[in-house]
Length: 81
Image (cartoon, rainbow, N blue to C red):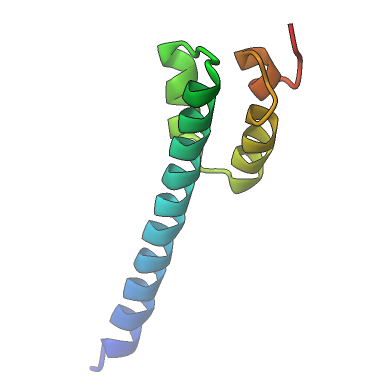
């Protein structure tokens, strides 16, 4: 029985998942770096929320908000205050 096709498909899937996780982690790290650079303080829980997020749409939204946000609410809720 030739399992090379199955192993190859499984390996490809796992590599793709790893790349996606890496991209999400990189985006999350960039958000934190940007906020730190801009002097926006986040709690440990908020930092964990960013680093724990794997949804690219959410990370992209938070990144765009982080460019101008002056608070964590500005990043997560789109509310400045």
